[in-house]
Amino acid sequence: MVEPRKATPLLETLLAAAAGAAMVLALGAIFLFVPTDRVQGVVQRIFYFHVPLAIVTFVAFGFTAVASALYLWRNDPKWDRRAYASAELGVLYCTLVLVTGPIWAKPIWGTWWTWDARLTTTLILWLIYIAYLMLRNLTTDPEQGARFAAILGVVGALDIPIINRSVYWWRTIHPAVLVTREGGTGLTDPRMQLTLLVAFVALLVLFLWLLKLRSSQAELEAQIGAVERALLSSA
Amino acid sequence: MWELVKKDILLEWRTREILPALLLTGVLSLVILSFSFEPGLPSRREAAPGAFWVALWVAAVYGFGRAFVAEQHNDVWQGLLLSPLDRGALYLAKTISTFVHLLIADVVLVALFVLFFDVPLALHCWPWLLSTLLASVGLAALGTLFSAIAIRTRAREVMLPLLLVPLVVPLFLGGVEVTRRSLAGQPLGSAEAWLHLMGAFDVAAVVVGWVLFEYVVED
Image (cartoon, rainbow over the protein chains, first blue to last red):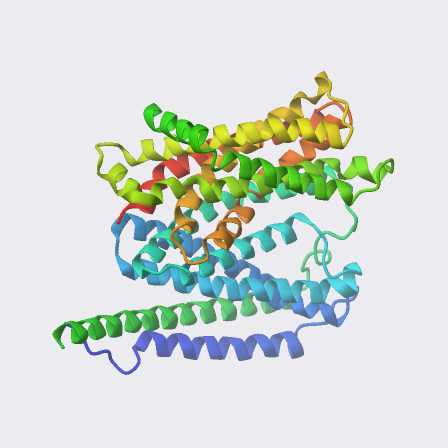
């Protein structure tokens, strides 16, 4: 009934190794290789983590939405576990985006936070998926919780473009409090572009590895639950 | 379906369970908010749109929290699910009756708001009233979907606002912007786009709720 699981699947090992290697490379590039930004100084280096983290956040929540829709459609718990794992990691990445952003913003903008369209969208995104995680924890029936969460996963994804549009208008109707909109004048130095790419790959592979790990962990949990129930009913 | 709407409204008329609570919480928030702004100062006028929308929000959340309470007793819900009715129709019926409740609250809140905040109610206020109407449709649509979910979680009172607030941000941003311009007597101008956005949000919310409700009640 329950297949024994191999010690560690090859894919997981490969992803772990790739994530580790890419992360070392990325850190080396950020701290040793890439030149310091002439205008912003050392603090600009956080950008090489901040931006990839933000992109992977969108990847994660996008994947959650797709997996949620597939779960509702196919009713296969496999997709639910993937959606859940991806949402958890998305919240983690999104939190890091919201932490690294203000660290950069304080010296550059002179304030930790401003209600800029991107910042607002990210914050609302974070709130939606915090609610997603809470919803899963607060349902009594796990299958029901999975369905409810999947509904939120789909509605949230559909809502995000509208939210983004609305906060964008909201800010453009108002006068901008801070003049600076984006980090610097674009990355002209090829070394900066390379560093950004390496950091992006590192954080993406790390995400994929953790996603795989968390999904298989959830699968094991489900198997243990099944064995437990079988034992209880036979006893 | 209309029978269900009629049932909900008749039930409310006879028991008066949801509306008074919904109205009172709305009124109370309006009073509290009214206290926090010194009369006669310009800040009061500037804060007025915000106060109105906070009060509307509080009233709405209390109303939604009660929306499915009647069905929870005596297995009414099971009965409805067993009846040869489309799940989508069940959803639409509930959304309409929730919307009607909200509409009554809107009328009362608008009246009190005019009174408390000394708003000159004139013809140029129509965008404000329209935005209230549009927000109520969207709120009823998503509120019905998510209160059916929240009522079956452990922390139901907390869960509903937690789920709903981030999702309906566009309605409130739009509502506050339109209200601000409208009350100041400014031409609508770029705020007209907000009304379109709110309308689009409503259509999307109703369609999504109608499609997904099936998965909420499936057992």
